[in-house]
Length: 269
Image 1: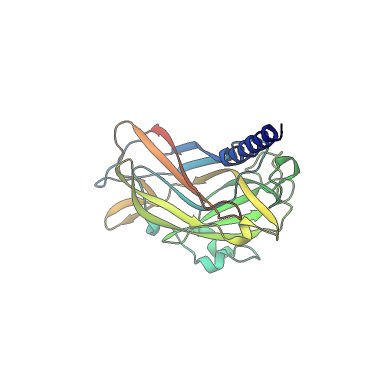
Image 2: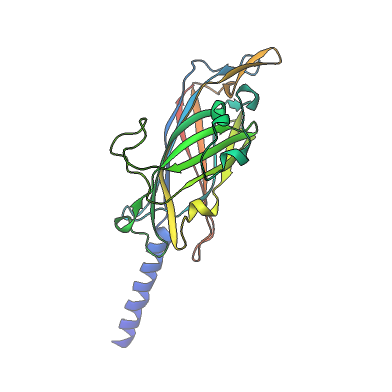
């Protein structure tokens, strides 16, 4: 009987360990579109605006996702040129007091990021609080400043009236860089950035886990070297479908090493 009990306990422990191992973040690119028609080419780029949205969840739907530390986001055949729009230095955009008026011309997009904040020791969504942040995107010339601000009620005009803000006093920016790469075998520009500690953990012992992000980047056009280029321009894609790609890397925790996952979405070129 004792041997049977020990065996049963061993099986129970193994099952528990297995269930923990199987619990993991889930990722989806749920929005991807461009405002300009046509594929474009290197010889004849087509300036465009774009919308990109992604969702992060947990395989156990009752839990918050593990905090994401690094992102890389881009689309097949979409390249960037920081000279196509006014720019502002990052130091002005990372001011806790707010964004100065002199940077208004560098504003190139906006959006909303939905987060769930809760104790590091308790991943339950039931005990988490919404921490939704307003997103404004500013041209740095070499990338984008992702300005994030908490807001009260009512929500900003561009949001649904039922969107709850964030109880935490957040007002900061992320320095995101454009990196030349290839997506689907076609030249592209990835927007890559690392989330700072004060956003991952706004308070000691608190995790701020992303759930959804949707951002729009406006069409910006300027003549550079005799050719019209956009902040984002289409320079081609293979076949009739364009691949939008988002890569996520979780932060290291006391029990898990960083993990990287890529999600994609196919849309019409």
